[in-house]
Length: 173
Image 1 (tube, rainbow, N blue to C red):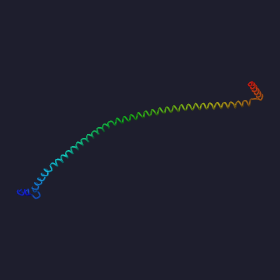
Image 2: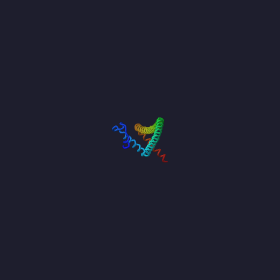
Image 3: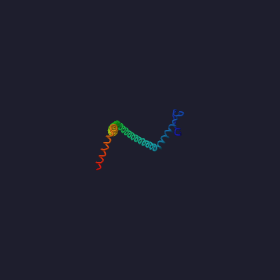
Image 4: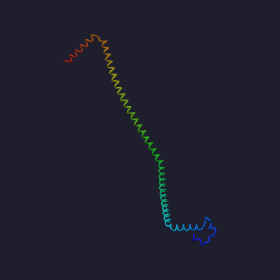
């Protein structure tokens, strides 16, 4: 204020609230602050510039990694169709081989059942024939008894007894 007091200022410079000396003081103060703090400001700005550069480098690296992942994902997606087709084909082949295996197994089981049925039928046939022979033998004996009982006379009985005795005597000698 003392410096400006010796000068005569124009009227507009002394306009209330817009005195020029206030601006001059402000410029001097800002200039001194810049001169005093220029090293610290320069260092802070350099640090900030380096941090921004490092962030840009990191961002570029992240972008490159992301692009690599996108490329890998695209290649995986392009192979998905081929993999799905491969899995489908493999499943169809397995289903076909399973059907063939089941058909072969069923055929073997049917053959086993057929052979078993034949054996059972043969066994049943043998048993039935044996029972039939036994029945006919019993029936023949019954018929023979009835025939002998109804047709045999006492003289025939006596002659049979004599023949049997004669055979016994000869067998003894």
